[in-house]
Length: 102
Image (spheres, rainbow, N blue to C red):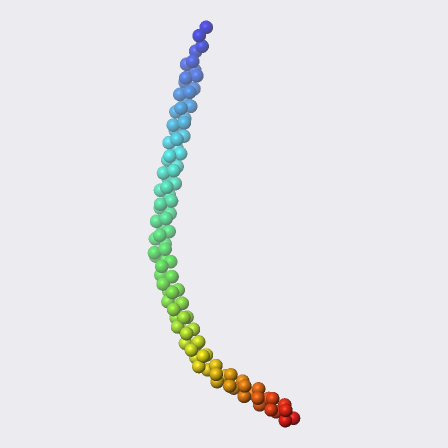
C-alpha cells in the first residue's frame, strides 16, 4: 500500500498561496503607511508655512517691542534711582531728627 500524497500536496499548495497573499498584504500595508506618513508630513509642513510662520513672526515682533520697552524702563530706573534713594534717605533723616527732638 503506497501512501497517497495528493491531499497533502494540495494543502501545502494552499498554505503557500495564502502565505504569498499575506506577504503581499503586509507589503501593501507598509507602502500605504509610508504614503500616509508622507502625506501627513506634507500637510504639517503646509500648516507650518501658512499658519505657524506668521504667528512666529508676529510673536518675535512683539518680543522685540517688549525688549525695547524694557530697555527704556531700565534706563529710566537707573537714572531715577539715585534721586529716589536720596529722597528716601531725606525722609528717614527727617523722621529720625523729629523722633530725637521729641
